[in-house]
Image (cartoon, rainbow, N blue to C red; front, side, top):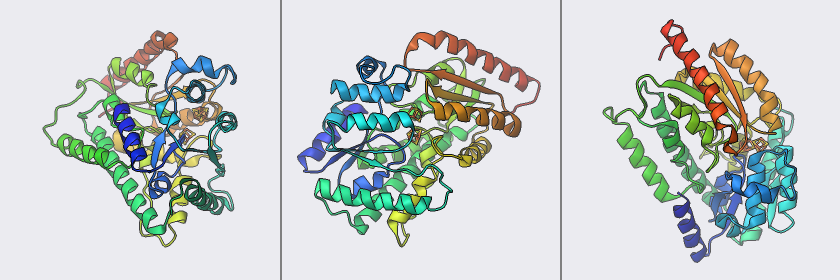
Length: 376
Ligand code: SF4
Ligand code: SF4
């Protein structure tokens, strides 16, 4: 995937098109595609860059932020090094303060994200940020970002979301043809690429065939994974869960289905308002209140029929950490499912301890199933 992304960046550069780094799912990739540029995800998933980051950042900070910043300090992410611009948002405190440090040496735009999505004026304010982003992209990339090009980009991203929903939907089967890890590996760091969409289409068509073989054993416990994103390189907890005899049938997080569940209205009279509406509805824990996350969990539990829920929280991620109390209560009381919270970072030091806790959870689910409480 990374090799293909580097090729795509090289070809965009040769073509005179821009490369725009993004760091969060609140960034409307449509706007970047409409400016003929490539939207490239720059979130860091490597433990190797963290020591360099800790020269500026506190050790007690989320590994995703530190890893991303470490790549910046080391200049070791070729996608970041080739980016003409980075677009970010005011999400969690750690990220937005880290952006100030990055902005000392890189061109950067930080969108001001309203934190109460249902609050008065929130949608209008966010629509204003969409208009500002469009103007800034036009000015900095020297490309006119017109309504027709924006509508075309919206259609492309809707198609990508729809294809990725089809792939994710395969996991609702009693015997899914993919593991959670295989599904995650379909995701690319660059969105809206025609070649990727064609591959998604081919894979979905092949795997939708009823005779596609199951990817996991009949006894595999169905797990819904929620919480923080599993960015490229940081899939360790997913691997531990599936190695212990489970299949992760749904990832509710930002690298899973969360950003795919809703599309943007292609025919809306005001495409900027349509974009603002879709993106402001994304239920990240930086929002307060974040009721939509629980509604989404209930909807996903109905579709994917998990037998338990695992919540992953990166070390020092305060928003997901605090919100986990609400999620635990909701999962146990409203969904009637066992819940396990795993807090970790990018170091493999606690892998054995996590595996023991996951095995205990799966054992408990199996004994509930044997007692007829849970069913596929
Ligand atoms: S979890 Fe929140 S801050 Fe992180 S990428 Fe998703 S929306 Fe952005
Ligand atoms: S995982 Fe938490 S602390 Fe880390 S970037 Fe996302 S919201 Fe911020």
